[in-house]
Image (tube, rainbow, N blue to C red):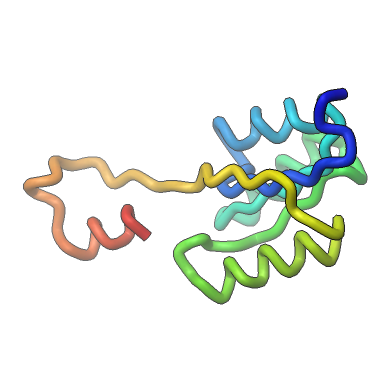
Length: 110
């Protein structure tokens, strides 16, 4: 177990690459925090991992500074530290960059 004793925080961890990464990290012995703005997907992911005590879900939107602070504080209060941070969260708004309005651009960049 290569990650025994490590704590990983994965943003956008409720689906896709984040979810697969969480699974692999658990298999390698890490304690894992998945964070996602989609609360339903986060809870469903926990259920898929059979509510393993080595993984928790934190509902947070990484475009909001206060929610980021909460996410870090909750991770540390739960597992005592953060060794690995995977910044996986992101959104896409389909459309050409040249036709994207400023609000859509700000959402993607945030």
